[in-house]
Length: 531
Image 1 (cartoon, one colour):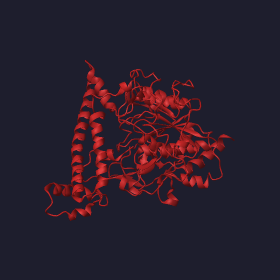
Image 2 (cartoon, rainbow, N blue to C red):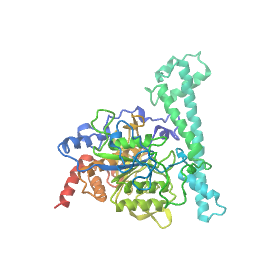
Image 3 (spheres, helix red, strand yellow):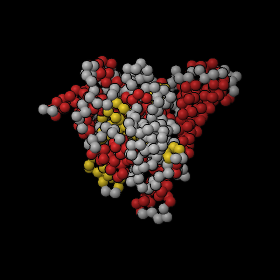
Image 4 (cartoon, rainbow, N blue to C red):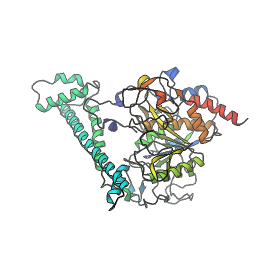
């Protein structure tokens, strides 16, 4: 998920751009381009015109491999997967699958000692392992040096950014005290007289620079965003980039043994389930119940497989999460996570191949770094490892994998989200991923942005199609979604820049997933299969 915190990273004082203050149309990701003038996936149109008199043939189980899901949320509790053979709370593995009390899913980053919340980045872990070696090969030494430079560079960047945003926070707080509340806006700065203290005058000057970017934003709103930014920088410095931090003992597994599967605990909510809960709502929050928001799919169950901490997920956990989901009946798996380095890619590859063999579709977020991922890494990936080098992309790839870039609601040159990764040979298609309102813990709702939001839109469309056309295999479902995209023929801003590029150069299909088109094509595909 691309939060406000990550958007702030590395930006200067006057480069702030808050999605929270933009005006995205309500429910835009479900809307239709021709009738609603916004590039949603036409799911509302599909329900109205194609499915109004049609009953789904099955309920589709979608696994959400993520930070956890609030299965008691008012808009999710009725669609959560319930393990039919497991007795809640008795501490026993009633169904014999190796996981006791896995009622709604499983948690691979927890143990008897509790749950992992904060984690290091993968590069930090690999760096620490190489640093501990008394002797390193020439190749290892070069890699170690590269990682060391990257970690030190990011640490310096975070330290500098933290100082900048602390200054903004302090300025807002000073003005808040001056005005007596946080409801002031840019226009109110003119009320500060010459008799104000030097501290207030300096705060006025700094706030004036920032306020030009968002004149309608109140001091209280900006202060809240600064608090989030400072929390992000603190987490990066104390945990993500800290080579001396290692929370894995909490899990209690033999981390070096990637064949080990029976570890973790049954707490599939975890300490911070916002990301996973948001993803789950996009896929299938109960439609038409008059509360909250409507997900894409209307006949799904959500399985929560907690695997993603506040930091980089571990390959061993990702592999086991995929296997768990497959073995327990998931037909679609959403994976809204990613990282720039891989530790045990072959373990993940083996799990992907297992899912492929079992006919399970994997939907993965392309990442939020404005990177060309034909040329740079974003793990996990559909391309299988070649030889012993995880950074050598093999020619073979999974036919049950969809890589998803993020679309903005703004259209035109701004159609691709400014943060979205892209790649003509790697990203399959795009989906709405900016200002997507969805469920968060505590029966609340919030708009978030990221390819993390785009992937579940695709997972929801896949589940919707599968529920009406279960005859389609995972490979056929992938083909269906990709062949039925709505193409964008415009010249657009290449993500992260203002340079123009044809939208078709950003992904394999050059289009946006479309539920209406996919259902029509699925009908044709099934008709041909049954002849």
